[in-house]
Length: 258
Image 1: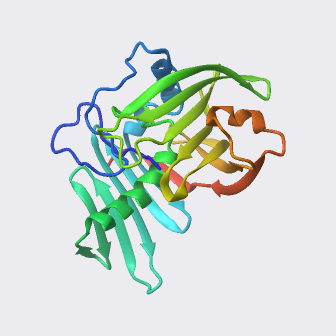
Image 2 (image 1 turned 90 degrees about the horizontal axis):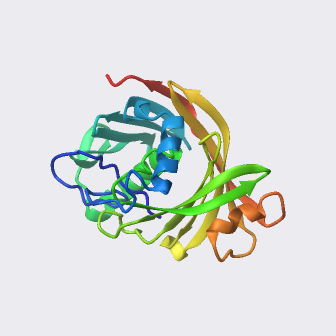
């Protein structure tokens, strides 16, 4: 599944052609584009500039994560213990991707590097949406208005340019933004990895931590294959969805960049 790796507008230096990392390419949605305006309002509602200069720590499925973003510089780090009791630290930053075992930096094959990037970046990417939806490899398209449980929404499609969109750049996402509150409430995606499929997520447990909106997700699959993920909202409240998992960020703390 495509999770662009963090590159920032105005970032200088070496490109990092890694899975899920948008490179410096022109976005197909300019600042005056209606879809871009919807996304920008949502980013501001969820915390805006606070996310771009912050240190965030949290736990996810038994691992400790640390996210540092500072005006174009970034560090994403995951710390866990393996089955042999060894302390594993894996991370990615502007200068590259790495893994440490009990404090010793280990060489990474291209396959190992991709695994680290997938394991670390995918959690941060999905955990802190809608941030990063204005990255430069993102292609936005306005799918128009919708309604869920009597509330008005704007549906925005997100795809990725081949250059900078990662190995799974052909994956497709649809986001439901509340038309009045400008929050991201639902998202759906179709992915090609591991045989492919679709998922639909509903935001739950929304809270504000250090000026940043944090939310968990209920992760659903369609009981029967759905032709267009933009129609996932029509299955809500019926028997067409089955709960697959919960995506929960625990112990979230946000502090200024040290």
